[in-house]
Image (cartoon, rainbow, N blue to C red; front, top):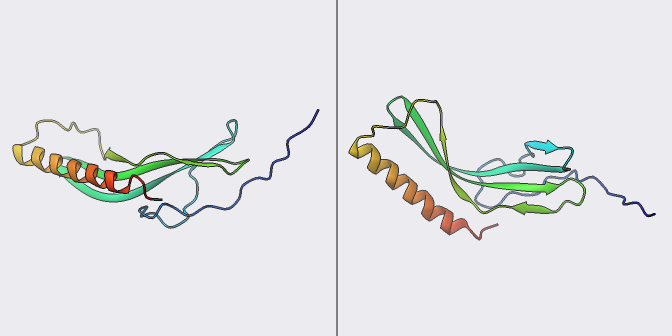
Length: 118
């Protein structure tokens, strides 16, 4: 019976060119059972204020790496929306709704542009 010898991966590879986090930022999580670690690549885009609720719009892609083989998979970039509170994002005025629509459209165009960028 043969055994597999693996050399743990210790270096942190460079980020995609569009990522605005510090180059080579560390992996955030490690799942010991799956022997994988992950990190998010993010392009900080915009912050919108709607009443008591702040929404952050960014472009993000999730990277998964095997700690044994070093194989990396970077998922396609996507528009990411985050709210800073549980305040409902409802009853937007026409201007607020248009602002949100414009920002989401611009973010979608950016995702299309960086889709193939490493």
